[in-house]
Length: 155
Image (cartoon, rainbow, N blue to C red; front, side, top):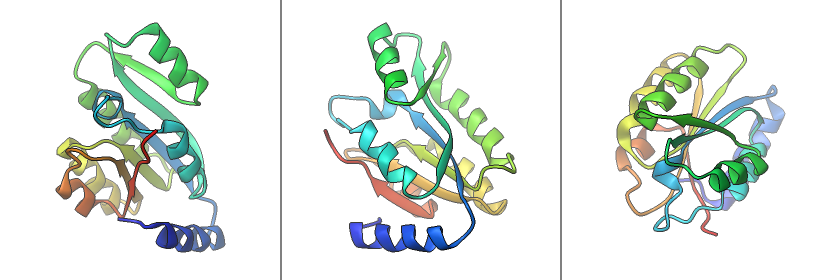
């Protein structure tokens, strides 16, 4: 996990290197929960310190309220509404970003292990991987697969 001191060292090292473009995808049903209570605006601020966010999507199911969709849009996220399994739609989009030559960093906000294969493929292709998550239920295997782990702040 990345502590505040380590986060700042990482940010400084990345500033010295070439510009880094980030694809940031959020597993909405997994992290927008009362038991998790994540500050999504703070997450965006942290990620912007590591590079330029070129893709910023939040995946929601068909039951997402208009109020939630509007709130996510107002915070800078592009809502993707799916009638099927949110994880499948997000994984397909994540793999598109893995193969996107204009993206250097794949950042996923989720707590479950379903996205581990995305990180494995991304790393094989030379992409940097970041997982943002929170307790309870943050997958240890997912944490161990990502290059960088960021614990999300609660609201």
